[in-house]
Image (cartoon, rainbow, N blue to C red; front, side, top):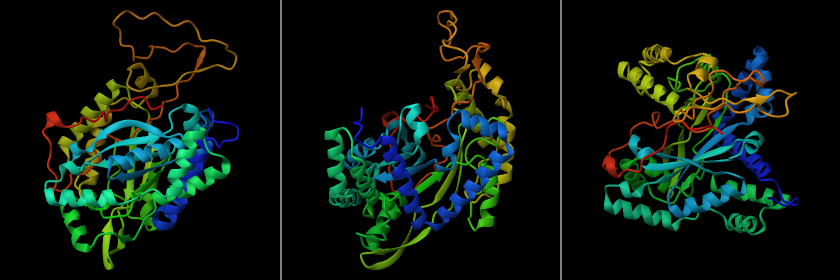
Length: 433
């Protein structure tokens, strides 16, 4: 437990999230435009839907909805990941989940650092999707060794940041003054650097193997490659982005629009072409972008299995093209397929497809006695009818990231491991607590 003289990890996380958003807004102006648009859409949706506003007020989400965001970074070595774990721990963020993105042709495996308890999530749910490069998948042995040397020689954390991490670990926390300094020092790790430590020829070799290899190895640190605010109406934001000078992706990723949202839906604006100096020679790099997300109900294993079947069926009918030219046809196929997934909160609960939360009535002191279940029954299935003394069943939000389906297949400069030897990612939906 933190000393009363220490800053709360929740407060440090909130400071860091706000500071990173301000930094990214300055580095990527289109992200600032996106934040403004999302806030306007959220305010309008809450004004038009008093029931939604009341529900979010009851669950503690209302005051922070437009402040919610997640980020993503890519690290080069296990040592960088180890220190990053310690950095995030100071802010009360811990690794949750495992994603093997090599299955989608992306040479990384990943986790998400985030707060764990409901209290901490309510205080500030900021999370960072963190990927570690798989250098072992580089086919070219000479390039693999050169990349390893470049990564071994770089230092992505300031000395002051490391000292404050060690102080937090030794003391069990940081004073408010040290916490403020820590946020500023930690921010340096995620800052964009337009001067690369490699020349253009080396950058091109890395890029030819895989553009993500170039994004990690050719730069001084793991610049934040996107920040993602939460919206309450992703379709409205998608329609309005062009009117604000932002070019969106052709199709919103994830399930179709529904009355009862499930899992995650995401969209983004296209990655920027940014000027870079490669050892004094001018060039460009494309990686950083802006993304938005709309979170829906977390699904049980049964619900996730149904989701996967319906998505596979839709994609077997129409495979979305990268240029978006068949976007309308794909959306129609998606909507047709997902007509078989109940779009009613009570049906989702009764069929055991999604996780729900139950709360006591104000005049109750204890829960009614639990019902006896037959031996061997499905332990994850909710009761067919909630007790009349228990109020409502708000959907439990998904807080994990989408499965690997949105990742596009990458370059051919990486070798694929046999299926039996790959690290298998648990990318399915789990409880979103």
